Amino acid sequence: MRLPAASLLCLLVAACGTTYEVPVAGGAAPGSTVPAVAGANRTARDFGRVVSRVEPAAEAFCHEEVPSAPPAYCDFRVLLDTDPRMPPNAFQTRGEDGRPVIVVGSRLLAEMQSDDELAFVLSHEMSHQIAGHIGKQEQQQVLGALIMGGLVAAAGNGYGGVASQDAIERAMDVGAYVGARAYSQSYEFEADTLGTYIAARAGYSPERGADIFGRPALASPGGPAILASHPASAQRQAVVAQVAAEVRRQQALGLVPDPSNVGRG
Ligand SMILES: [Zn+2]
Image 1: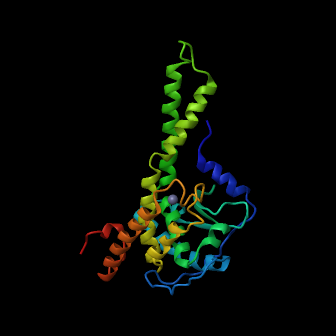
Image 2: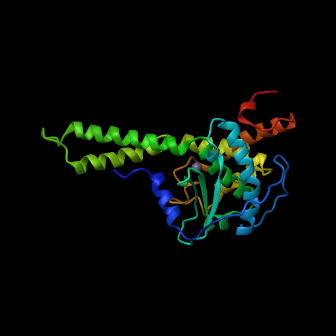
Image 3: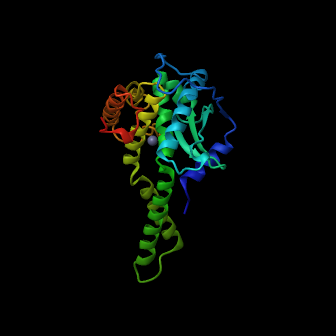
């Protein structure tokens, strides 16, 4: 049984010599808005600018949402992977020091048409960490593997004998795959929801950010993980629009936008 996807990603990150850590300068005050910087092809310079605003907003949000988390849990590292072989993609993983690592591929960066889109992708990936999705997915993977492996072992070889080790391992692989994907769609909506709060608190427009879901170059099958095996783009944009309206309502009341303020007047 191959376990678990996250540790594989860690190896990939560690093995990749072309990633570099973007220096994070002091960002602007959370809640202030930034002028829209639009135009095709975000660059490494744009990346540093957006990270310097989103990272502190996400860190503060993370500590609020997960007050019991150890300091490293919310201490994000954000990397730009300039390896041209990396598909246009972004993902979240964990470093060996326990810190969450967000990796954005430069090919995905080049597809982005605005700082809002980059801010939303970063906020979305950071939200997977804040919501603890990697840990939950690993548990589901292990559980799925054990259930499937156990079923095949119990069923034997169909002739009253024992199932081969190979058959059990294949079943465990299938179980791990199914287990990891069992809740992936609800995780994506959750990451979009929390990401909307983070992007707004960093001063970006989450709705303009969600325009990235409609980018045809990225919406093809086998496209980036931020889009592939994900709910339909229109559905995700609708969720972001709904949450962004709630964020604006809270801001108008002078509240710091937070999911716990939903419905509070
Ligand atoms: Zn996601």
